[in-house]
Image (cartoon, rainbow, N blue to C red):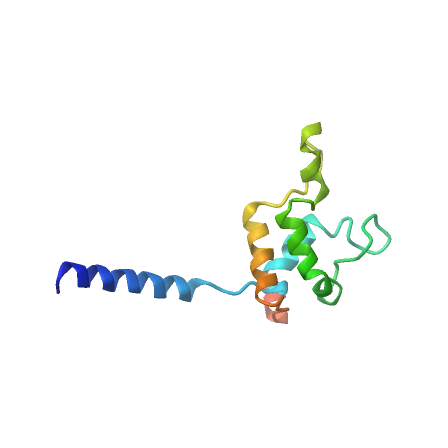
Length: 120
């Protein structure tokens, strides 16, 4: 095999392997843990946020807005207050968490399965 053919084969293999490793994020497996860790303290009935994020049914209608506010770093609100110093319970999202939410929304905000809930 010529060198360029070998290189083309290797690049093709890497692309296929990477595509196989990619999983579309789901609410139950990927998004729910992020919300539980960073959002539900305020986004639950009787708390400061205007809408609860405790179930898929509550979260799903807000998916496009959620993408907008996390990519704009307007939520969680601790992010916009960093100029005051470190907050005691900073709920800032890591870039990886933001990426998961964006990918989830872009994929149509799939719920996932009960099994995925049990696995996380």
